[in-house]
Amino acid sequence: MKRYLPLIVFFGMVVFLGIGLTLDPRKIPSPLVNKPAPDFNLRQLHQPDAEPVSLESMRGQVWLLNVWASWCVSCRAEHPLLVELSKTGEVPIYGLNYKDEDEAAKTWLRQWGNPYTASVVDADGRVGIDFGVYGVPETFLIDREGVIRYKQIGPFTRADLFDKMMPLVRQLQSGTAGEGA
Amino acid sequence: MRTLTAALWLALALLAPTAGFAREAVPNAEDPVVEERMMALASELRCLVCQNQTLAASEASLAEDFRREIRDKIKEGMSDEEIVTFLVDRYGDFVRYRPPLRPATVLLWFGPVLLMGIGLVALVATLRRRRSLAEEPELSAEERKLAEKLLKGKDAT
Image (tube, rainbow over all chains, first blue to last red; front, side):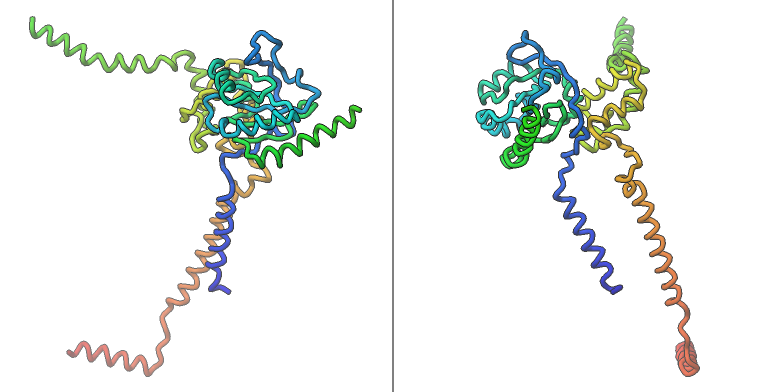
């Protein structure tokens, strides 16, 4: 038995280090999930003179807040998926245009398609900090009461979006719809 | 006249570097007290983009935003503790370089002590065993005689 002790310790380490390899240190669990979303009041990208969008104005619907920027390379990667989702009309997607220039952002949307019901402008990144944003893209699923239900860090994969998050969206939509009817 | 010109040039050349230093100090001069508190706080907090750097050391644009946020909060009169809480509420304990003591971090805090304890016990056990091994082996009378004979024989030659 004693002879095998180093071997046992070795395999123990292999198991732990192996688990460590599957973890992504960039994905930091957000303390904001299942907490009320921070309040904000931001002007719209395309209609700067229209009523600013606030958390209050979104109350009563399940919606996605996608943090994006024209300078963000991984945003390009997930963008076709968002466009695809927006075409189904299942859930409104709002964009938080993070630390970007209006003109660059508009050009980017013209070029790659605009999946957003509206984009709001967070030019200096303050609202981003309130939402605990530390890398773009990030996406928040917010329920009818304004509570964050899910946070996607980094670009969506097809599986993340359609198999993981959308079922949650439908669940939230049907849940409160039943109560309201 | 010529020496005077030369002396002037020399004086200018000697002054030039100090002029350079003077310019570098300007950004911090805005409000040194706030800046100092901000840097002290920032060196306790992690930059989330380049995770092994503090907010104070990082050049990432997010770190720049964090420093601005901390500066503003200090000016608003928030205490250091309130500012850290503000960031922890949004980014989690990970932003702190000194994780707080909670059930989830007990192993983190006391793991090293535990490992050292195990190491010490193993060390003492090993040393004890070695000492008993190193004790002089018993020789039988016959062996002793043989050894003495060999030693003497060696001396003789």
